[in-house]
Amino acid sequence: MTRHIERRLRALAEEMTSLRAELGVLGEQLAFQQDVVQDARVRALVAETPLADRELRVASEDLRRIQRALDEAATRLQGLLTEQDRLLAELLPEPTTG
Image 1 (cartoon, one colour):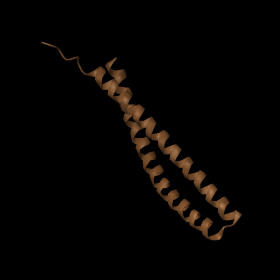
Image 2 (tube, one colour):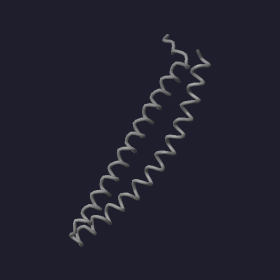
Image 3 (spheres, helix red, strand yellow):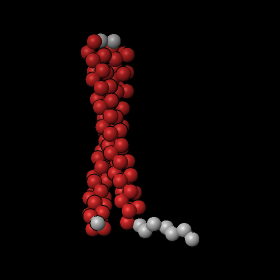
Image 4 (cartoon, one colour):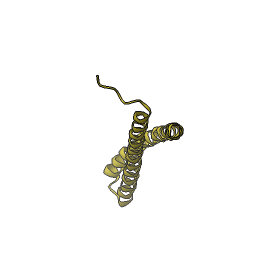
């Protein structure tokens, strides 16, 4: 049983490392896309054309998509951390009262 827990903990560590890297990339993409949306917003206000409005709408949708992916990755990471805590608790002996 202990070996199974240790193997799972190692697998979790690898998953969390990968997920943290993914979160870093998504964070950079989010910051970039926020700038794109801001630029598109200014162009839409100045140009007042259907094309500028469409570009703003597309940029905003992309921003929401990236934010959703970032939120989902953060939720997955939290789930892995919870599972890691549970497995570590199984490895540790129960405290004795006395």
